[in-house]
Amino acid sequence: MTDVLTLSTYSGDHLPQIRHTLLDVYAEVYAREIAADPFFSVERFDERLTGHASGAGWTCVLGEVAGEPVGYAYGATVRPGGWWGGLVTPADPDLIAEDGRRTLGLFEIMLRAPWRGQGIAHGIHDELMSQRSEERAALTVEQAHPKVRALYESWGYRKVGEIQPTDDSPLYDALLLDLA
Image (tube, rainbow, N blue to C red; front, top):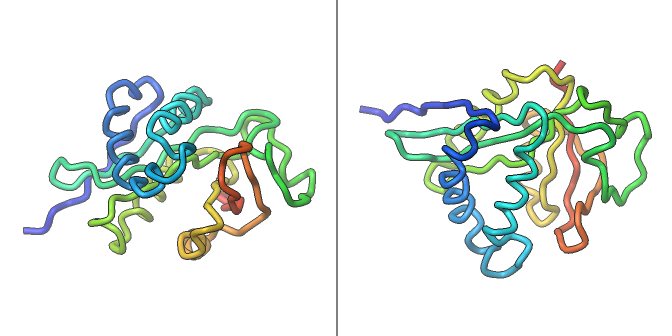
């Protein structure tokens, strides 16, 4: 019998119910980075999670197989003037204009190692996107991970610049996906 992927959707009101699961998956996926760089600590991620979940329309899609969490994606509508702070490459002002309705900020998408390469991350992503009314989605990917960026590009994302959201964060590629 093949295990079935179950996708469940949660809003910001549900964060207390799923926070521990999100932190556990993060700690596993980012174990190497956590050991090497304080930016990736579970505590700092938890702070970012709290900030992300305070955004309008925060939604999380959690994937489980046989009741075991395998990965998740979450995002929220980008606030007016948000997302593009720390952009280090010139960009068209119209491209980065945010009005509080235009863009879904895809803050996190992660999958535990045993379930990679099976299309599960794409399924979680697409489930989240199917629930959104924004015209586009934005995400960032560490420049140190070109294979991950190539995966997102195979899903339709395009690179629009480079961004360093905080002084101690890595340099990221900023990507956009048209949802309309």
